Image 1 (cartoon, rainbow, N blue to C red):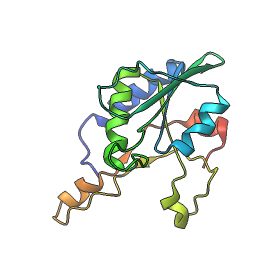
Image 2: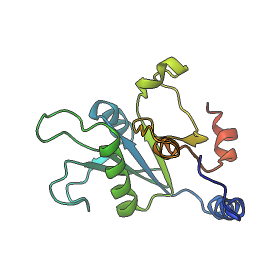
Image 3: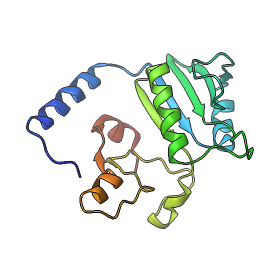
Image 4: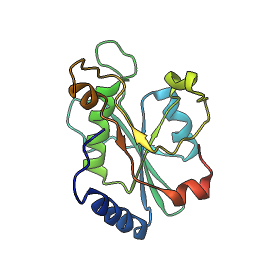
Length: 169
């Protein structure tokens, strides 16, 4: 876990207070696979954006639309240009997520998918989790301190209103 820095709790609390005052008007949904993305695209009648602001040559697919008064952007990394399979994995996910945040400036980010690797921890298809911490499970560095850095366990923003209103895991 990252070392505690003086004042970090106060700055996090200030950021949370600012976020709580700002209503959610734009959501970014990141989904790794086309088979996971299409039901959401169909449910909200999202339209593919052929003129996305992503760099030329990337296979990333951007859908957009609205639900009630909320703008919905859904992005999936597309297909690998060499093998024709969905571009899954941490590198693809981090690149498309970063570029999507920069381009779309969402108020809320939803990382959606089956999380099949977490079945042994009690997760099942259809479960929805509100995360308290995030970690990078695919980077192992067997050197003291670098091992902690590699996993990068970080606390996420507290969202008690979402937890209470939606009764999520």
